Length: 264
Ligand SMILES: Nc1ncnc2c1ncn2[C@@H]1O[C@H](COP(=O)(O)OP(=O)(O)O)[C@@H](O)[C@H]1O
Ligand SMILES: [Mg+2]
Image (cartoon, rainbow, N blue to C red):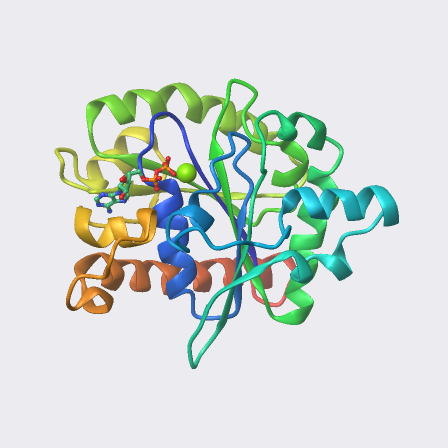
């Protein structure tokens, strides 16, 4: 069970789409938390087609924290259902509702990360959509509770140039943490033109996800477009299912190693 943080260095490579696709394919119960500090309500307005969250959001949770000093017991109450299939319960925690709110959140990231990690006891993993890596990186207090960070990029030179700049900030942040936090890449649309192998070798960071280029299937996830025929067996969903299984197994092994259950 784990907390996985997704982010993007520059532009809009597809971090939210990939985070949502992984969430919908995740092999266990899972919560997708919109922690983008540049708020857009991307999942509520996109995939969920303008669903009224009835006040449930990060902001509501912050209010709980101010009043009660704890988040854990209220976290799931602030989530909306994404869908429920036979295997797993999938939820979404909507993000900030107005520009600038994130600035008031500095003291909440740490307790929020701890609340995410505590869902482990209920058998729930958390996928955090952290949005852009700014010149300050990502909220360090949130990273403290992460098992791994996945940086989403496209395979173009422009996207990779942005990765080169912001990866250094993120790597420094991760190196400053007292616990080891895994780092991987998600290459959205590999081979356009660089392959994931070339990108991994160039940056010295492994590629953990390779969602193929598929604008029609991606638009269902990012914009709530109607599902094309055979959506669930599309190349994009198939690849995300494989990636979700491999990443969740990797995170579970990391946790077992950290707790001394298996040798490193
Ligand atoms: N695998 C993909 N193939 C094609 N288009 C994609 C893919 N993933 C995302 N997109 C598209 O990229 C655009 C930006 O996606 P989004 O997830 O909002 O990016 P970000 O969260 O990084 O800003 C959207 O139009 C989305 O449909
Ligand atoms: Mg996004």
